[in-house]
Length: 221
Image (tube, rainbow, N blue to C red; front, top):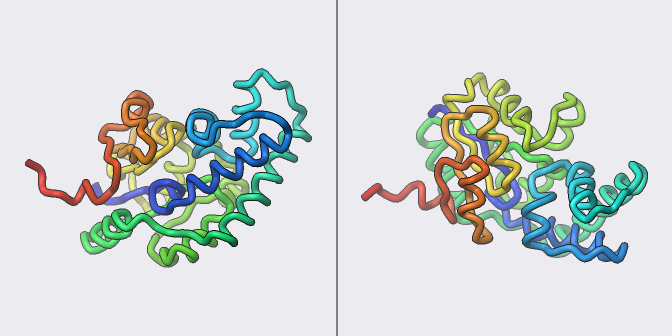
């Protein structure tokens, strides 16, 4: 492997929970119950906001117009921004250690996320400047890339690094994300299990599942 392609929320930073709380608030403002663990993992995690909103509403058999879906997505963005401004952003210590080790080993690094707040979140977490390439929600929109579970965002990150998929590892906590890694035929897909869904991560495409990236630095028995 010559490159590492990292998801942001839930892999590098502790922002997946903040995203889930924002989704829960927005849907429940409309009287629609939303489980911040099960529904977040199954329907919205890793996906662009509009796709996530549409996926969840469809699962609840709620026929919503494009205008309503856009309103929900915009409101979620507003609530998430309020949450991170109030609570701040923290990186996972094990992920920071792994990033430093990967950089020291000479590997190329990219962050791949559907979030349009990637630059803001990385800066708040003290991780800005650590990556050779960044594919975020803004790049997705500008380059008309399909979001996860399509592999397009990870393939674009590899292209930006000059690395073929089979020479890159993908690190994901979202089911849609490991699906993207598998669909793109990447050399290794690492599932990061923060919420007790190891089996689901494997079923959706993870080759290896860990609870923290620091586990990958431990000597093999």
